[in-house]
Length: 383
Image 1 (cartoon, rainbow, N blue to C red):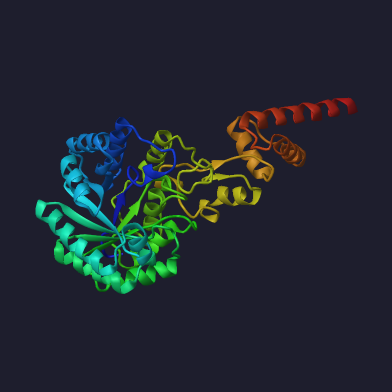
Image 2 (cartoon, rainbow, N blue to C red):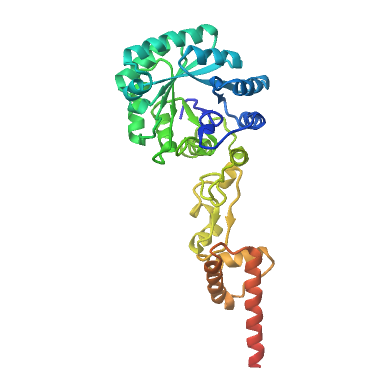
């Protein structure tokens, strides 16, 4: 890729909209510092119109003078803009529905009235000195010609970026690419893509949008967000590095700690199979896989765990073979007797089935020592 791509984190805005999630002021400030340290260039820090506590949090974040752009999310209203001014940020995302469905149901507006509001409110925000991004809510179900007019109107009024939001998560990568490519070819300003994960396609759609010409992508740590969540920062950043060789400026080795910090603050458990940061994603049990990995990690490892600050782990379970068992026993100071290998594999399988889990190194040693003692006892009985 021959152009810069920017990942804009909205964990503290859209991420916090996940049911039951509520960050304290201290947690938000710590998270903002961690995001900045990890190389995130822009943070959507909150929604000033929520009131005094939110404004206080945003002002405290602004006072940290972090090397990031702090953006406030606002509806496209005078009240929300005034709250953003009070919060002390220098950038705003002014959001307005783009689809006829939402314009009519939420605001009782038609397309023409929406364009008038955009021209008026963006002009006011730009005149105040804000960096202005315009959010097109429900862009994925909006009329394409209207979206083109929104972009033109926003740019003419002083906006620097337009966000295309797949608010209800109905796009796939193919339709995402088509929409973004069509609009990017016409747009005089940057486009941003904001995905939701209702069909499990948020990351794929985000990558498609970037390849189609979007220069900004809206993400959250762990994909935290309402309903099925958003595109996960750690997945988008890593995929772009591995698949496209793109440098987003994100320090990939910082991602596991960042994910753990958000999971703790959100009181959410991270699934063991969660890509990039899950406990098991670099763990290998299958005997065939382990045998190959021990000869050449590339056989069953498409992503080097060191790239994201992780390590490969060999675990023992029902599907382990003699090679894996010997490897783990070796780390514990035991050499697997070839004559006992088949019996050891059988015992490991029984143990794993019994406990419905992996067999720890301690348990493995106990199984092996017991097996050796029994074998020695049989040999003595034959003498």
